[in-house]
Image 1 (cartoon, rainbow, N blue to C red):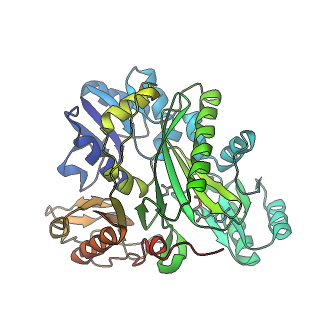
Image 2: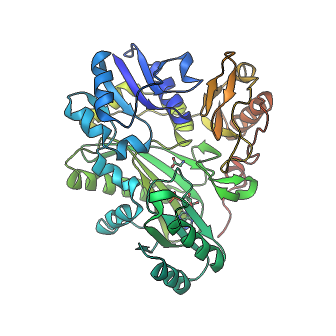
Length: 428
Ligand code: AMP
Ligand code: GLY
């Protein structure tokens, strides 16, 4: 069958790569795609992925039988609703379901209604009451823009002054309309763990655990980013914690069926903090994680087309997930300056050499081809270097050996991805 994937980051490259392995796949389109997807799919540069009617028109013209929505923006814009309405199978929740990600206040209220453990919070649309609440709770404290901010709208403040500045900058428009409502949250402590689930018909099929590294620099220092590296599975998670996270995902999935008319058909992403009182939800996302997908899908042995069609058609009983025993580690190579401003157009060398290492796959995140057909950087996060190995150490070593072979001016990355898995759990 012909499949259209919306999006153009590392997550979409990994999705396209996994779909391409299925015998059921004929032509794969990806809009807009990137320099990496171009070698395994047809990039469609001029399709507006946030315009549902345009997506339907393209799908009809090219006999597309499945539309897969990667990023959050088209979901929140209601593209899944329009495509489903047109009678085409779509992998991705409705606009209403996507509000679990599109509004942190909506998401918190959903968690409250269903008894899902999360940090205490209050949300504000005015400066003074927000500042008063910050002073009442005291530091450390967390300030979040309510809306979509590409993973950057969260400020964990150790000092009261920083929290107050964060509240002011949200209301001053640092995150655009996303910051016109501000959440102030209790600061939780503990290791983080992501658990994604395929959700359809109110049923959750949990994937395997992964641990993202959100801060820009080694030692979890610097600003929050979209994610600088990830590994899977997470060996420090205890069986009790895993059971608690799975139960939360099942509760949330069942609730989506009641609240969103069974139209939640896609991925529910649970971002957890493993606190001393048990796992608590930091956030829900309505899509595959980026970069979690880049380590989760390479470990998936079942056919992704079968799974996505079962999800899209509301047949959760037909979903059968099999996972490889191997470990996966992903190191993100970013442009100098990310998550702040950065230059583009730097020539990238060494990917082919890196992929000669057994078990290594390089997913592209922000790359394109220039007029001379050279591969160049075109985003903040540029490449995701993924390695599979029979042990965690082997996967990590291969990933960093591959990183050393790839070069572009200003290459920035963390050297400690997975260090926490090796050291074991720190006590909090
Ligand atoms: P979010 O986008 O809500 O997952 O937040 C991004 C990152 O900020 C998380 O991965 C955590 O590292 C951190 N964070 C978010 N909420 C909290 C919280 N309540 N306490 C401590 N850290 C948090
Ligand atoms: N890895 C974080 C996210 O996808 O939101």
